[in-house]
Image (cartoon, rainbow, N blue to C red):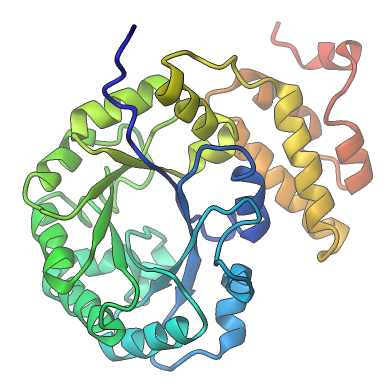
Length: 334
């Protein structure tokens, strides 16, 4: 019998602004795999936001427990830099039923960073500390506070210091994306640097970044020493990645690779859910957005993307997701 030393690790579904909404969380958690999910960030500036803003980002707050329909817990994420405003909105979130609050110090978007949010705070670890501390004190232990960082802004010089600032402020868990803000999403993710950060903390550290396959999962855990991981873009690229990891953890065996038909079925169901609330033209863009994510490392999905990217009618797009072999021939490489 093969003993799997990595069988206990948990898997989180990362937030992706404008991409992973409540419907996407629902679809990606329908099979066993993810242990928790995090919402798109609620942007905090200088005021206490009304409940409708929280419900927009986290519709799951209207139900108990706060979870996806399949029962996977949903944690609410805040992004901001003003400790007072973050504290006020943490109290608001708690009053609305939030079960955990995550603080975003990892967003690399230029617009967010120009407005003093996300990864921009990693240049000043004390500001990270003050933000986490304000939220932790406002919640007074009622629900956990967690945080997400990158390895720095322009370089990794302050990676450990920023991580220590989150723990000192009261974070119960830290997700570390294995790149700096300036590195964006360019490979590789530096899993060994996540390990360096982990060695200086006593709270759990979660590895994030470039875990696209089962082999990547094994390498990320081995190099970082982290028990838990978080998947983002890769979960969209392959909606069966988390279930594949979970199956391997439990059995030591591999599930079959995800087929195009499986991917297409997810896109069709996603469109059916979205068109209940959104105009078809918007749903077309959302389906193409997800299909573009599926291209990552998958030549077949890229082939279908090239074939479908100019379609503007939703029914035509959905009807063409699973074409005949003859219609695909024109898109095969010479």
